[in-house]
Image (cartoon, rainbow, N blue to C red; front, side, top):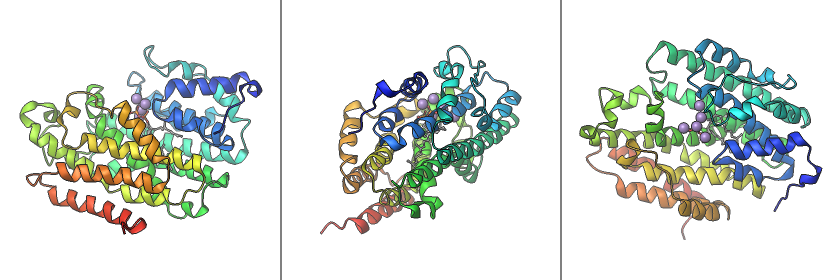
Length: 359
Ligand code: PS7
Ligand code: MN
Ligand code: MN
Ligand code: MN
Ligand code: MN
Ligand code: MN
């Protein structure tokens, strides 16, 4: 629907879009379809947060150095030609960090209201990431309680939900009431982050990073690494089911949030990642292969979901319903959380039923 006019773009604009495509598997497509008013601001928001995450994720950077850059990352946006050279050579986003001046250049040109939002979120996310990066230095497990798990996910994703919502409202594409209920936009981000943390458990553990809260995994195994041993398969499945249950508790708020969106490109931008997330939770639910290798929904399934979730809210809810139904079918009475999972599924189903009654 919306076409970029590349002939009117400066070199640094083109570079920003190049880095968007290079650094994002999942978001570049949905961002590129956004309404022109939001296209560049959201692209820059993405690249700023991608910068923060590239530093957070790079385990070769000493914690003291890392903490300093993370806490001051918002100020980078005032420094012409800023560049970051400390990432390891094999880091896939290294080129963006070396060439970060193009982000700074474009940032200066967007509406001041968007600049304020991006800087505010970058400052708060950077400080939150720094807190957890210091915690993980002093402790084997940075994320012990479920409250800490929620707080970490709030810093790295709930805040993205807040920033995007403020941008939607600023552009008049979002209903200002979305800002009165912070739980709703926080849940939009946290639901995606928790799904990512569940799915990536193996990859993260291989990088010696553990995000699953000890409060949950210690109910199933004595040591986190036991989750990956075949003799603890049943415990691992029950543990991952409890993680899925924990994430499912955000689903109704995500649907509620999406009901407040009016503009089609903004709706699609929000709905596609959410429906992909519920499909991913379904894929992970009682699927032992997630402890052995990286699992992903198939291209075909992703395409189907993309088509459905961009029709309207009802079609997006159908995707949710289908996967909730599938999770229910795989739920096992032997699982200590059988009842809680069943109730959580019922809560989402009832919520959808209350907006779209079946008869
Ligand atoms: C600004 C679109 C739509 C109200 C870079 C989108 C990592 C799950 O495993 O690379 O680390 O490689 O797949 C995105 C709310 C955030 C939350 C967060 C910014 C939705 C830096 C996405 C994305 C809010 C911290 C995926 C949260 O990372 O994972 C923009 C509404 C970035 C959204 C991180 C995670 C994103 C994430 P991995 P990914
Ligand atoms: Mn990624
Ligand atoms: Mn990270
Ligand atoms: Mn990351
Ligand atoms: Mn990554
Ligand atoms: Mn991940």
